[in-house]
Structures are given as C-alpha cells and as structure tokens.
Image (cartoon, rainbow, N blue to C red):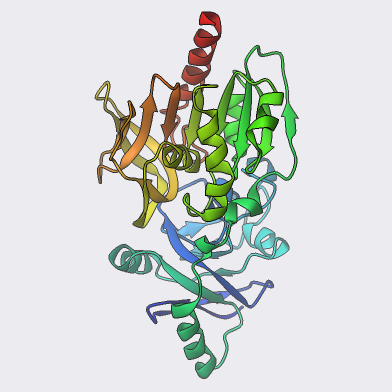
Length: 364
C-alpha cells in the first residue's frame, strides 16, 4: 500500500491510499456517480471514456466482479476514487485485481462525500490522479498544468470507443435496425435484439452505406464527450440530418443530443452532470413519473422548433430528458432505458419504438 493523490484544477489536493500497479499519473475529468450498486456496469460504460470516476457509495467491490456484467469489452474509466475498496470477495473476481490487470489507477481511503460536495458546488473539474506522488514542486507544476491543459472533451472520445467495423447481429425478427455506435452499452444491444435484428456501424458511417443495409429504422447509441465536437458535426450529425424523413430514429443519451443538434437545437454543459440510477423524469404527455439511470454531462436547450416537442423532463432541474417529432418519426431520451445499473421502469421504450416502426412498415 502506498500514498496517492488526486489533484483538481482549483488547487485542491486529495490524499488517499492505493495498491495500484498501473500508470503513476492519469489525466481526466473528475465526475461522481451516486449509484449504490452496479459498479461493474458503470466502470465498463463507454460513456465514461476520458473521466476519473468518484463513487459516492462508501463501499465498492464487496460483491466482486464478473466479466459477463461488462457493458463493453473493457473498463472504460480512466481512474477511480472511492471511500473503501473492498479487498476481498467470496465470489467473483476481486475488483482490485481487475483494475490492476486493466491498468486502471485507483485511489481509496478518501472522504468521497466531501469531495462530491465540492464538485457539486464548483462543478466538474479537470484532475490528475497520482498513484506515485511526486515532490511538492512537481505537484505545484501539475496544478498549473491543469489550468491550461485542454479539457478531455476536446478529444474525439467517440472515435476511441466506437466499433471500427460493422457488426451483424441478425436474428429472426422482421425488423432490421442500424445502430450507430457512439459507445454503445451491451445492454442496449441486448434489449433491442429482443425486438429487432441489428447492424452496428461505426460512428462516422455515411448515409449511402447505411441505406445499403436496407434498415427499417435507426438507433443512435449512448457515448462520451461533447455532442457538438467538430469531428461529430462533420460526420455523425451530418449523416443523422440526412436520415430525417427516410427512417424512424430513436436516440439514447449522446444519441439524443446528436439527434437534437441535427435538428438545429443547441446543447450546453451541465455544472456536474447527471450520473446515477435514481433520476426521476416526467413524461409530459401522460404526467407519469419514472425513475431512470443516467450518465451524461451535457443537456439539450429547450428551444424546440419545427414540429419538435419536449416529451420528457427532469423532475429535479427541469432539463430536457427527451424529444419527439411525430412527422419525422423521431424519438429520443436522455436517460438510459436499458438501465444497467438502475431500475427497469423505461425498458418498454425499446418495444414501443419497434412497434412504431412496424406500424410504419404496414402503412407503406
């Protein structure tokens, strides 16, 4: 066991312990998640690419880890900060061992509640996680570096997590969906495949290629980073705009944001984001409240237009949680209907979307 540090761009230095054998210095956006369970799914969610994750629940790792619960092929967070990292697991693999195997640095013995309150007050910040602390002079240099270093979202994080070539997940379902992969979770694919065959394509796939697959609908996945990144505007958003009117479209999380930008709406960065499995949202059409899983740092501005309306709102801060445009066959949600981790209140949205697609097929 050795000393370790988390350095924030406002000069805050958080001391802790580690048994990490990975890189001594890691850079990322420091964010927090309020889920009490589901850490395996959270750590392997591609939406966390570029981020150092704080878990507010005080004990992490107590039920070990199973690879079958991964939401992608590997752990996606850049680093981890917890209060207590459970050193033992009577079943499954120890989290500590997996973090070391996958070269993910971690820090424990930290007052994560106090650290979370600081982020809630000041907003998410850039940070360095040092598992092999440097001298005081070097630490001061790191603080100065944080102030001028480009934000992780300036990278095209989607390119890091998107599939590099098409994947064909075909079954006997009559509906075929092209899923544009911006960092898709395995649970989205698993839920969608209950109702449709799926062709997973890279984030920068052009419209001609998509048309060749002869889909009945398009699904836009979750993913990390800035939805208005120049590389996304030049590729994904342009393609999405060209798909309007050709196919029904369902956007999830980042997919919702990209869909909104393609419609001419704007996004903005939230102070500390929505990351957890207990976020209440309201359906504006029915008035019903659902508890949802969320993981995002950006939101869509509510200035809707051209037949687009807000269908879902966040109960806590009234941010846009979903839009729809019936004329264009467009539907989207900011939250995660597949949960993983989280409640299954809104899993029906997969079935509902495919049903709409089937009804559209029958009309034509």
